[in-house]
Image (tube, rainbow, N blue to C red; front, side, top):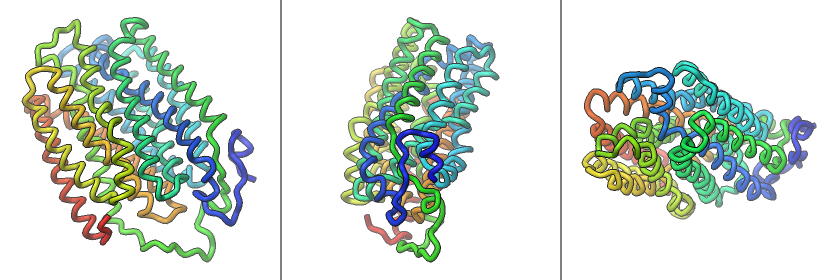
Length: 421
């Protein structure tokens, strides 16, 4: 008997002769809607601390400007470091026991830890709790695996684009909420509110998400089965994983210290948190405008073309951010950057899904999520160190060079794969 069916509502037994995507055809649209909401709420809760993170770090004991920048970057990156470590493991478990269980695990874990962050009393406790949130959480990562494996191939780019839109909307509203909510609830109360919001997503996931998973057929390659696809090209897979890392590195390289950068543009301390929230929301707003369209474009013309074009366009939008003199100029450029970034992850996920046999899809997408979170770890750390040593403007130049080099690497991988689209 399916172990999921005995534990969670909304999980049914499998028809053994049909593949996993075929058996879940009736569910993927509703699951997508729930996962979009769940990704939205969890990303709101995770990103809303960005505007006040340096302030919270100072309250917890950091004194000097360098210490505040360094601990802010470490605390912010700790969650993504934890998720980078465990995403392949959770992806492998998802292939064995089902994807819905991983969604529930992530939502319950994140709701608990987010509330505990509100009672931290030192920067070390803050970093430790952020790390635990990454180790046990990762709702969007789990949702990507569920939707990436259930959705029909011809709709995968669009569905993943929609899912990204939900996450990006969370990233958009999170900093805005984080800029205003501490004034009403206090910083610690804001964390409690975030935990409650994720708890709602957990309840909806338990009772509304449906999955038809049979461990006997879905957890392992059937005896005598031969995959029709060509053998896995691990060099191409490595390029996809590297590109995913660079995408998040580009987006996150300046985020944790952007409050300091905006302060250099003449914004007063009384408006700094609020303005920082608006600027941070810019990239997410731009991505919301184009994510689903670029995902659908990848379905039509192919993921490789979308990835190369978006990498080059994002590199171009990075450079002028180093020369802004007003905060609103930076905000507009972040919107443009978000519009070009939006097509990358859906296209990469679509290609990664088909790079391995079906019974390894969850593990592959787990590694992909790990690569993304690695970028979210490296971005703040690298950006913080470059900002301290060379100036914050240098972070934008560094990121542009990395993205341009990555576009060349993807072009090589496309030629190696022999797939024009």
